[in-house]
Length: 140
Image (cartoon, rainbow, N blue to C red; front, side):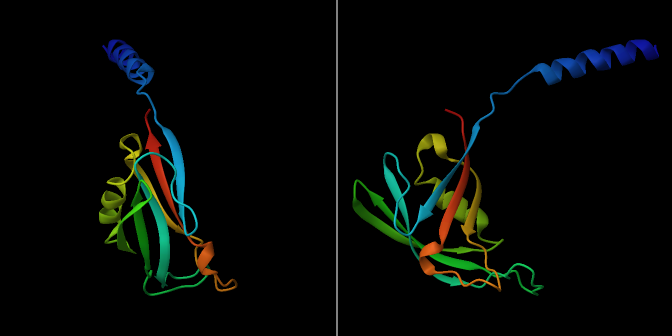
């Protein structure tokens, strides 16, 4: 009986492993202050970083901090809106949903949003060095 159960387990395991779901391609887009995301439809532009109170690298902080930015939205070179986004652990999902509404349909499976560069006590960040990095999976 043990041999039959072991044999069935091996057969079912190999069937489950051999079934391949088409994996998407991991891609990244940068929303900078001097260039928009390329593509059809809407364009996103990082207009300004209002605040960056994130805890710098190599420092122990009581509070993780937050980043507040303004994203400008354009369609066909026409201004649509400015949106103030606050990046904290509590606002992450809302930011994902808002940004997904302006990405191409095939690009809407967003995996990550990151504001870079990350603060460092040894280096002053120039405002023009900031960018929003959007990581997404593309299935097409």
